[in-house]
Amino acid sequence: MKHFLDIHKTDPAELRGIIESAKAIKSARIGRSKAALDDDLPLDGKMVALIFEKPSTRTRVSFDVGVRQMGGQTLVLSGNDMQLGHGETIADTARVMSRYVDLIMIRTFEEATLLEMAEYATVPVINGLTNRTHPCQIMADILTYEEHRGSITGKKVVWSGDGNNVFASFAHAAGQFGFDLTFTGPEIYDPEMGFIEEARAKGVSVDIVRDPVKAVQGADLVVTDTWVSMHDAQSARERRHNALRPYQVNEQLMSHAKDDALFMHCLPAHRDEEATSAVMDGPNSVIFDEAENRLHAQKAVMKWCVT
Ligand code: CP
Ligand code: NVA
Image 1: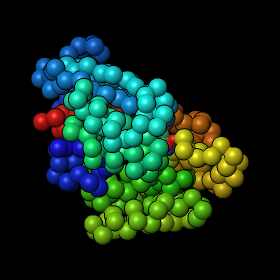
Image 2: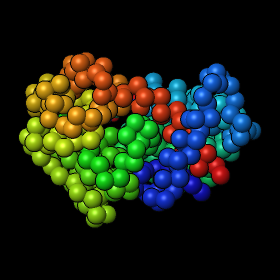
Image 3: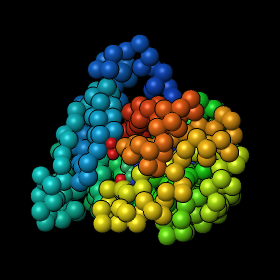
């Protein structure tokens, strides 16, 4: 069973294979209309459940379109409309769903929900974001970096802001793809140290630098994300904004990175909060390529899961 649960749980050679497959899948789409079928149809005859316990635009649409292009069919389900949201166990849900579908993608709150789904499902399960990680996003980000700048191995990636679920998957990816990572943000929103130690154990440098200007020096890629994630209490909004404001990615901060440093944001963004529109719409921003690449990267992930 090939689940795609997290980047650090997938072998580096397999991850590299998925990225190369995504590049080939993307180039085979050139000149095709969006609803045209792929030639190889790896999901022909397959039914895919996309379960959302949180809102989504990119994940929902890119998985749905991707499955259809690969010849499969989708069921897009809201956790709240399922018995899952009303007391049925995750284990029973996993066993029942496995009788109907060939693949399950789930976006959920607790990581334990994802893990229990994977334990009891008899079909592959894909992590579409939890409170702790967002691996599909970072596969798309690596694809995006490499199409603009070549191999990410040995490069310096700087994360400015909240040490959240998207950062965690960058930390996993640093260890698996071999790039250096710097976190800059206020101590109260530091990432879990375990993510950092695990990457360091794989031989890459992962630093925490409190001064954002020092942190971005020599950066090949600068990344940020919302200051208030879907699982964060709205009551903490003001406190988060006050603490994170010095870590806003603006033109002044970007001027300390390498001249050709790319800027990424997984979106959705709160413009002129975590990043200014000048940076988001600037010449080094690849935010909409990232969004597009969710489609190609996840198609490669799904193909890997079923073959
Ligand atoms: N980046 C991302 O996962 O976006 P959605 O929440 O819109 O799916
Ligand atoms: N950190 C954000 C990512 C959204 C795609 C969240 O979890 O809400």
